[in-house]
Length: 239
Image (tube, rainbow, N blue to C red; front, top):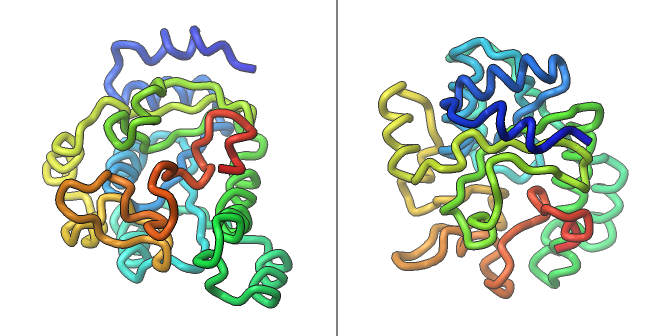
């Protein structure tokens, strides 16, 4: 287990680009960034690619993404000329689930939705993170109440690595201003009321006054809005 205090001190006082450079030097070849091509992730991709920071960028290709997401993915690769590595669900597990329950079983129960997220997102994530020591994410503190309790540097017990959130203290206006300043491509669904964009069948626009993640799995109890990708404890991966 890496020393959280040392990592925290290493990035303290540094801007996001400086912090990413420092971590890339500390964990050469063992540091990755996961993007889902939302506002926040596009900001971090720009920081990494535009500054030639040696951090591998990957995404989880669930097979159910929005057309707009695929466009941003392709456009980002065109602009920066850098690879973005795709991790797909295990073919056998996915086929077995769809053959037994149909393509939209996640609407039928929480258990089914968690099974789908587990196959399409959690298991591929574990493969993407395997062998690495540091995971960069686009989490921001203001995105949801449980995220406000987090820190910009964390130990991920489930994946046994350090997590660093370089724009943790950015607010949404900071993110938008950064995108405008550097002319970064972004998902146009954000302009249509989608603050958080996941799989197409599981994401809708939010209404004025609704929670940031109200558009995710909207047919379920609104009290929990995480699929498990950023669970702090291993047991929370079932949430």
